[in-house]
Length: 239
Image (spheres, rainbow, N blue to C red):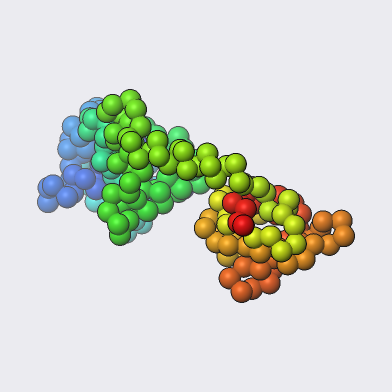
Protein backbone atom coordinates (compact mmCIF):
# COMPACT_ATOMS: atom_id res chain seq x y z
CA UNK A 1 0.00 0.00 0.00
CA UNK A 2 1.19 3.59 -0.62
CA UNK A 3 1.47 6.49 1.83
CA UNK A 4 -2.25 7.17 2.15
CA UNK A 5 -3.26 7.95 5.71
CA UNK A 6 -5.47 5.61 7.70
CA UNK A 7 -8.33 8.09 7.37
CA UNK A 8 -7.88 8.41 3.59
CA UNK A 9 -7.98 4.64 3.23
CA UNK A 10 -11.19 4.49 5.27
CA UNK A 11 -12.80 7.10 3.01
CA UNK A 12 -11.88 5.26 -0.18
CA UNK A 13 -13.27 2.02 1.21
CA UNK A 14 -16.44 3.79 2.36
CA UNK A 15 -17.03 5.29 -1.10
CA UNK A 16 -16.59 1.86 -2.69
CA UNK A 17 -18.97 0.14 -0.26
CA UNK A 18 -21.63 2.85 -0.63
CA UNK A 19 -21.35 2.76 -4.43
CA UNK A 20 -22.12 -0.97 -4.32
CA UNK A 21 -25.36 -0.24 -2.47
CA UNK A 22 -26.47 2.98 -4.15
CA UNK A 23 -26.39 4.35 -7.69
CA UNK A 24 -24.63 7.53 -6.57
CA UNK A 25 -22.52 8.52 -3.57
CA UNK A 26 -23.18 11.81 -1.82
CA UNK A 27 -21.15 13.61 0.82
CA UNK A 28 -23.91 13.03 3.37
CA UNK A 29 -23.81 9.28 2.63
CA UNK A 30 -20.11 9.18 3.45
CA UNK A 31 -20.64 11.25 6.60
CA UNK A 32 -23.36 8.87 7.77
CA UNK A 33 -21.33 5.76 6.93
CA UNK A 34 -18.16 6.93 8.72
CA UNK A 35 -20.07 8.77 11.47
CA UNK A 36 -18.25 12.05 10.88
CA UNK A 37 -19.38 15.61 10.21
CA UNK A 38 -20.02 16.95 6.69
CA UNK A 39 -17.17 19.54 6.74
CA UNK A 40 -14.70 16.76 7.56
CA UNK A 41 -15.93 14.76 4.56
CA UNK A 42 -15.68 17.77 2.24
CA UNK A 43 -12.09 18.43 3.37
CA UNK A 44 -11.04 14.80 2.83
CA UNK A 45 -12.78 14.57 -0.55
CA UNK A 46 -10.88 17.67 -1.65
CA UNK A 47 -7.64 16.04 -0.51
CA UNK A 48 -8.42 12.80 -2.36
CA UNK A 49 -9.37 14.74 -5.48
CA UNK A 50 -5.96 16.44 -5.46
CA UNK A 51 -4.41 12.97 -5.47
CA UNK A 52 -6.60 12.01 -8.45
CA UNK A 53 -8.40 9.36 -6.40
CA UNK A 54 -11.92 10.81 -6.61
CA UNK A 55 -13.97 13.21 -8.73
CA UNK A 56 -16.34 15.62 -7.04
CA UNK A 57 -18.30 18.64 -8.18
CA UNK A 58 -19.12 21.13 -5.43
CA UNK A 59 -21.94 19.53 -3.39
CA UNK A 60 -22.39 16.98 -6.15
CA UNK A 61 -21.81 13.25 -6.38
CA UNK A 62 -18.54 11.62 -5.36
CA UNK A 63 -17.00 9.12 -7.75
CA UNK A 64 -13.82 7.07 -7.60
CA UNK A 65 -11.32 7.58 -10.42
CA UNK A 66 -9.70 4.56 -12.05
CA UNK A 67 -6.72 4.99 -9.72
CA UNK A 68 -9.00 5.47 -6.73
CA UNK A 69 -11.01 2.38 -7.60
CA UNK A 70 -7.85 0.24 -7.68
CA UNK A 71 -6.78 1.55 -4.28
CA UNK A 72 -10.27 1.14 -2.80
CA UNK A 73 -10.60 -2.44 -4.04
CA UNK A 74 -7.21 -3.32 -2.58
CA UNK A 75 -8.17 -1.84 0.80
CA UNK A 76 -11.60 -3.50 0.74
CA UNK A 77 -10.28 -6.96 -0.17
CA UNK A 78 -7.55 -6.70 2.46
CA UNK A 79 -10.12 -5.73 5.08
CA UNK A 80 -12.47 -8.53 4.03
CA UNK A 81 -9.75 -11.17 4.20
CA UNK A 82 -8.67 -10.05 7.67
CA UNK A 83 -12.30 -10.16 8.79
CA UNK A 84 -12.62 -13.69 7.41
CA UNK A 85 -9.44 -14.66 9.24
CA UNK A 86 -10.71 -13.40 12.58
CA UNK A 87 -14.35 -14.46 12.18
CA UNK A 88 -14.42 -17.51 9.91
CA UNK A 89 -11.06 -19.07 10.82
CA UNK A 90 -10.53 -18.05 14.45
CA UNK A 91 -14.23 -17.94 15.31
CA UNK A 92 -14.19 -14.43 16.81
CA UNK A 93 -17.52 -12.59 17.13
CA UNK A 94 -18.39 -10.79 13.87
CA UNK A 95 -18.65 -7.32 15.44
CA UNK A 96 -15.28 -7.62 17.16
CA UNK A 97 -13.72 -9.17 14.04
CA UNK A 98 -14.93 -6.25 11.90
CA UNK A 99 -13.52 -3.66 14.30
CA UNK A 100 -10.18 -5.42 14.71
CA UNK A 101 -9.76 -6.00 10.97
CA UNK A 102 -10.17 -2.27 10.41
CA UNK A 103 -7.66 -1.40 13.14
CA UNK A 104 -4.96 -3.96 12.49
CA UNK A 105 -4.68 -3.41 8.72
CA UNK A 106 -3.40 0.13 9.31
CA UNK A 107 -0.63 -0.73 11.77
CA UNK A 108 0.96 -3.92 10.46
CA UNK A 109 4.17 -3.78 8.47
CA UNK A 110 3.27 -4.38 4.78
CA UNK A 111 5.43 -7.52 4.72
CA UNK A 112 3.71 -8.94 7.81
CA UNK A 113 0.32 -8.16 6.32
CA UNK A 114 1.35 -9.83 3.05
CA UNK A 115 2.23 -13.07 4.86
CA UNK A 116 -0.99 -13.03 6.88
CA UNK A 117 -3.04 -12.61 3.72
CA UNK A 118 -1.13 -15.42 1.99
CA UNK A 119 -1.76 -17.65 5.01
CA UNK A 120 -5.48 -16.87 4.82
CA UNK A 121 -5.53 -17.64 1.09
CA UNK A 122 -3.64 -20.88 1.71
CA UNK A 123 -6.14 -22.10 4.32
CA UNK A 124 -9.24 -20.94 2.43
CA UNK A 125 -8.15 -22.59 -0.84
CA UNK A 126 -6.92 -25.84 0.73
CA UNK A 127 -8.11 -28.63 -1.63
CA UNK A 128 -8.50 -30.96 1.36
CA UNK A 129 -11.06 -28.69 2.98
CA UNK A 130 -10.64 -27.69 6.62
CA UNK A 131 -7.15 -28.83 7.76
CA UNK A 132 -7.00 -31.23 10.70
CA UNK A 133 -4.87 -28.82 12.72
CA UNK A 134 -7.54 -26.12 12.34
CA UNK A 135 -10.25 -28.47 13.62
CA UNK A 136 -7.94 -29.34 16.51
CA UNK A 137 -7.55 -25.63 17.28
CA UNK A 138 -11.33 -25.15 17.40
CA UNK A 139 -11.57 -28.08 19.82
CA UNK A 140 -8.83 -26.56 22.00
CA UNK A 141 -10.56 -23.15 22.08
CA UNK A 142 -13.86 -24.74 23.11
CA UNK A 143 -12.61 -27.31 25.64
CA UNK A 144 -9.22 -25.99 26.75
CA UNK A 145 -7.60 -29.36 26.04
CA UNK A 146 -6.11 -30.99 22.97
CA UNK A 147 -8.17 -33.57 21.06
CA UNK A 148 -7.15 -37.20 21.51
CA UNK A 149 -5.25 -37.49 18.23
CA UNK A 150 -2.94 -34.62 19.29
CA UNK A 151 -1.83 -36.64 22.29
CA UNK A 152 -0.95 -39.57 20.06
CA UNK A 153 1.05 -37.27 17.83
CA UNK A 154 2.98 -35.92 20.82
CA UNK A 155 4.04 -39.48 21.72
CA UNK A 156 5.16 -40.08 18.15
CA UNK A 157 7.09 -36.81 18.13
CA UNK A 158 8.78 -37.76 21.39
CA UNK A 159 9.97 -41.04 19.87
CA UNK A 160 11.19 -39.20 16.78
CA UNK A 161 13.00 -36.66 18.95
CA UNK A 162 14.99 -39.46 20.57
CA UNK A 163 16.26 -40.61 17.15
CA UNK A 164 16.79 -37.19 15.58
CA UNK A 165 19.93 -35.21 14.89
CA UNK A 166 21.12 -32.28 12.82
CA UNK A 167 22.45 -33.32 9.43
CA UNK A 168 26.01 -32.14 10.13
CA UNK A 169 26.32 -34.84 12.83
CA UNK A 170 25.61 -37.73 10.45
CA UNK A 171 28.49 -39.83 9.14
CA UNK A 172 29.23 -40.92 5.59
CA UNK A 173 26.70 -43.53 4.50
CA UNK A 174 24.07 -42.57 7.06
CA UNK A 175 20.59 -41.58 5.97
CA UNK A 176 18.01 -39.29 7.49
CA UNK A 177 14.51 -37.98 6.81
CA UNK A 178 14.15 -34.22 7.08
CA UNK A 179 11.96 -33.16 10.02
CA UNK A 180 12.45 -29.41 9.98
CA UNK A 181 14.71 -26.60 8.83
CA UNK A 182 15.68 -24.01 11.43
CA UNK A 183 17.46 -21.18 9.65
CA UNK A 184 17.20 -17.52 8.76
CA UNK A 185 15.10 -16.82 5.68
CA UNK A 186 17.99 -16.60 3.18
CA UNK A 187 19.48 -20.00 4.04
CA UNK A 188 16.05 -21.59 4.46
CA UNK A 189 14.96 -20.42 1.02
CA UNK A 190 18.16 -21.78 -0.56
CA UNK A 191 17.67 -25.18 1.07
CA UNK A 192 14.01 -25.36 0.04
CA UNK A 193 14.95 -24.41 -3.53
CA UNK A 194 17.42 -27.31 -3.52
CA UNK A 195 14.56 -29.68 -2.73
CA UNK A 196 15.45 -30.13 0.93
CA UNK A 197 11.99 -30.06 2.47
CA UNK A 198 10.34 -31.88 5.42
CA UNK A 199 9.79 -35.54 4.59
CA UNK A 200 12.54 -35.87 1.99
CA UNK A 201 15.26 -38.50 2.55
CA UNK A 202 18.95 -37.55 2.55
CA UNK A 203 22.06 -39.72 2.34
CA UNK A 204 25.49 -38.43 3.33
CA UNK A 205 27.88 -39.25 0.47
CA UNK A 206 31.07 -37.44 1.40
CA UNK A 207 32.43 -35.15 4.11
CA UNK A 208 35.49 -32.93 3.76
CA UNK A 209 38.34 -33.54 6.26
CA UNK A 210 37.26 -30.64 8.49
CA UNK A 211 33.57 -31.41 8.08
CA UNK A 212 32.96 -28.61 5.61
CA UNK A 213 31.52 -28.95 3.02
CA UNK A 214 29.30 -32.03 3.00
CA UNK A 215 28.13 -33.88 -0.11
CA UNK A 216 24.65 -35.38 0.09
CA UNK A 217 22.25 -37.31 -2.13
CA UNK A 218 18.67 -36.01 -2.41
CA UNK A 219 16.17 -37.64 -4.79
CA UNK A 220 19.04 -38.91 -6.92
CA UNK A 221 20.78 -35.54 -7.10
CA UNK A 222 24.21 -34.84 -5.62
CA UNK A 223 24.26 -31.61 -3.64
CA UNK A 224 26.90 -29.82 -1.60
CA UNK A 225 26.10 -28.11 1.69
CA UNK A 226 28.18 -25.92 3.94
CA UNK A 227 28.46 -27.07 7.54
CA UNK A 228 26.44 -24.05 8.62
CA UNK A 229 23.60 -25.10 6.31
CA UNK A 230 23.73 -28.77 7.36
CA UNK A 231 23.49 -27.76 11.02
CA UNK A 232 20.15 -26.08 10.30
CA UNK A 233 18.55 -29.32 9.09
CA UNK A 234 17.04 -31.66 11.68
CA UNK A 235 16.59 -35.22 10.44
CA UNK A 236 15.22 -38.47 11.79
CA UNK A 237 18.18 -40.84 11.61
CA UNK A 238 17.24 -43.87 9.53
CA UNK A 239 18.60 -47.33 10.21
